[in-house]
Image (cartoon, rainbow, N blue to C red; front, side):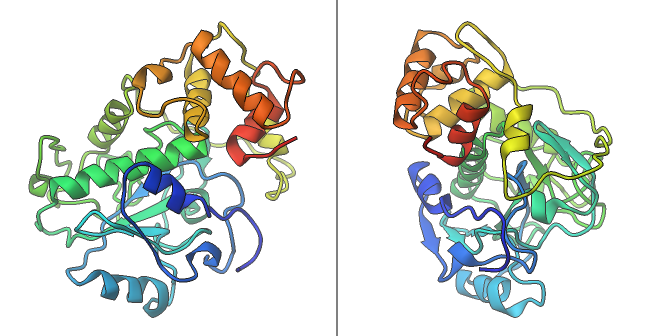
Length: 315
């Protein structure tokens, strides 16, 4: 294992629970770039394509062993819709770009590799067809990962700058839009056929059963004199609001997704993600509290609840 930090060793279980076929590349649970694990809970998911036309084995050989900047990405979605897990820690692939604001914070300039999960997808990017089964797996994997991380489904971004809302003007992926098969058809935002990020985010929200929110407006991050210890989630958990039965809004939606990811609500019932803390949500939260040693000490959703929801901690 390279360095300290957060390693997403739960990826295989979460992706299989979403109905996806997972191949675990040897050593993926302890593999990371030289900086180690993620310094804090990842803020979202990067959308890429491999720009290759080869076998899964050849793609993985290069991403894990052949590239000087290995590991390249945390996983690769193959043409048959199987997902090959490469690295549980931070990986390389985003390069220079940003900053970019998502729902839980801003990815600093040139820092997407350490702040977000990178999903490569096997496609040449120059007109090779994107099968419907592969596109469906792309959305399913992205939504499952973001739900487990406590992010919104729309916390995704394209490698390409695209219409000005993606990561970098040096890349075109994912592309091409007119090669996408099936009922969902993204718009093209440039001459390279880069998928519209607005369309990707809208479809992520739709497939999660949520209304489509407005695209977040990038704002510079607030300067912090002393950064928090990356090994501790205390500062981040304390920054989340206290919510309770009767409350509504995006933080209730986030809690509902985390309860479902932990098996305390039915993840397939989109009514569970309505953003309203009613009797059903209250019952699920009560069961979660008892299972995690919270008892009556945190009957609202406060710092201790948020920490248990995001990390599985038992008090």
